[in-house]
Structure formats: C-alpha cells, structure tokens
Image (cartoon, rainbow, N blue to C red; front, top):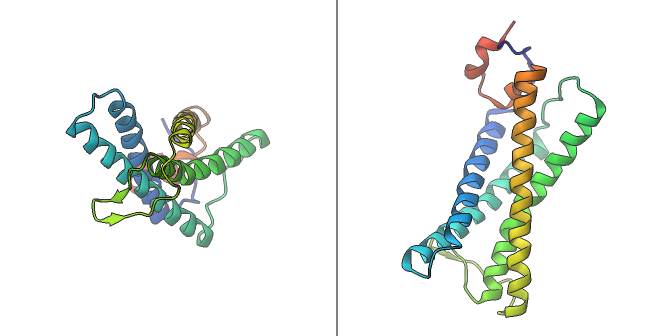
Length: 187
C-alpha cells in the first residue's frame, strides 16, 4: 500500500526517544500487571525493583523528550479535519502529562509504604512523603488508574497512527519512522 509521502519528519532524536518510551511503557505495564498477583517472594521483590527503575527511566526520558521538543518543533500535521487535529493535540498533551506524573505517583506510593526507591540499585531517591498506610492506599489506586488511562490512550494513539497509515494514507506515521523504512512510500 502506497502512502502519500510527507517530507516533514520528526528528528532522529525525537524518533528514538518516542520508540524508547513505547518500549519502556509496554515493558513496565506488562511487568506491573504480572507482578501484582505473585505471592511475596524474591522474584516479586525483584520485579517491583525493575518496575520502579523502568518508571524512573520513563520519567527521565519524558523530561528529555520535553526538553528536545521545546527546542525542536514537531513537523506540521498533514491536512486533516479540525476535530482530528484537536484530538491529536489533546491526546499528545495527555500522554506527556501521564508519562511525567505516573512515575511520580509510583515514587509517592513507594514512599508512603516506607519502601525507598533506589534507582538502578545505585541511587537512593528521597522519600517524597512519610510512611502513611491510608495515603498509600489512595496512591496505589491513583497509580493504577493513571496507568489504566495511559494504556487506553496508547491504544488509541496506535490505532489512530495505523488508521492514518492504512486508511487515510496521509503519511502521518511515516513522520515518526526512519526514512529508510519509508522509501518505498514515495510516489
């Protein structure tokens, strides 16, 4: 299927950070869902540690993405109905907000349970709040709810990208793919 070629593309750094974010988020959502039902064991504790490390990495990568985006404007969207442009803008803002605050909510949750986050097993992060069981319950469900929302938004984002690629064929997805992958899409 031939896609109308869009010359305006994201930078290589923006593409790398985007796909790295996707890999980290999918890995962490999968790990999060898998670790919760496990009985208390060394494996479960290890998975919780990895989950925290990946979460802090998502936060750091998101900060890098926002910094990069502040200095490198994204390419303009191809022509599309105004409601789609508005939906794309709103969904991107929500994705960035969730990518920034979900790791913070996990860190807050960990602090409220009295378990310090030690990034990569090397860098102890300060507790953000004192140990508090009631707050921990609230933060646990907040973290879960925001992750559920992120999952839904990522699915919508992916579906929209695929729709633009295979139905509208407007080159929207090609803007976030390396040029070598889209050479056959030129008219």
